Image (cartoon, rainbow, N blue to C red; front, side, top):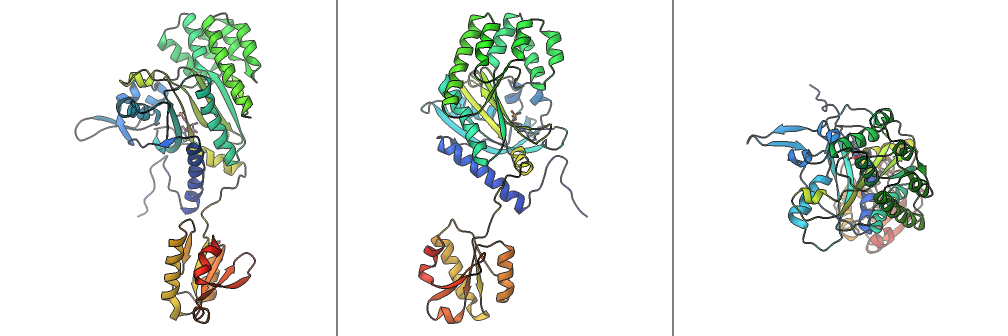
Length: 416
Ligand code: AMP
């Protein structure tokens, strides 16, 4: 009997997992270089955590179940709510701004297709206790730096939910009505937005996109003082991004469906992914921590979709180094196998960054070397009786096929 995975979830063999590790590690290193420290949150939570503010898009795709104690739980569809909950209950007294990151599987009961899975991976950050252009531009620069580092071609779009909310409220829409319109915008359903919002300046604004210059145009379209203030804040963010060489496009017609966003929002789209091309989404959410019982705390964050980033890399032909074997230790005869074993153990001890494979299948030397080249080993260390008598081994460069005798005590240094 052959078992298959449930729909929408996947196995990852060693090759694919190697690429995933590379992407996660590369993003994790950039997060850490910006001072973000990783936190962990549970994979299942109380349903209420998401009912509070995540919006219908998330709620209708939730994996809900009852545990044996009759509690209503769900698999987490995203991590921002969990990290905000943890901040409100445990981390609120830590010095601010507090920079946190996370990475792990998320679950949404969606119709599986290319780039859309029921279990998928996100890596993201949340920056608590800082507001204003400096904090917003840091988050956006972080997105840009991570994707640039991976070698991807992408477009970064920036909008401002605060601007949309203020305008819609001036039009007489209550919070629920405003949320609905923002969700329609997120889906790109302009026709329904036009039917609901009759105001022509709002629609004009929705069609504005381009460089920082469009802010002036936007300010000339809207009359509300509050909006003008938000726009001037936005232009400060854009000036900081320009000075850091971060490429972006302002697009007022872009909105994010999650109800908790209050200010700047942004996303990144990768070339060549088709319909599911959004590889990152985020924004400012200044009310969520308070909603979870914490003190009023401004916050901004985003999440990368790891699966889509990997698909985009493949589609764009970006090299992702899979796992390689650095050194393959082979024995020239049966008699030296114990010494070969010892040399492999010592090498791993002296340099834990190296991947050291050691022949444990009793292969003859030529077979072992063939295996080394299948493993794409950079070097083979050949342990033979004649060299051992001189406390040496043969080091073979697998690409050039050149070999030389190296003293065992110098081997680790030679391979560093
Ligand atoms: P969101 O939490 O909806 O803002 O999503 C953030 C990112 O996660 C998106 O930009 C996608 O790259 C990724 N993502 C969301 N849903 C899925 C899914 N069902 N399958 C794969 N990736 C997803």
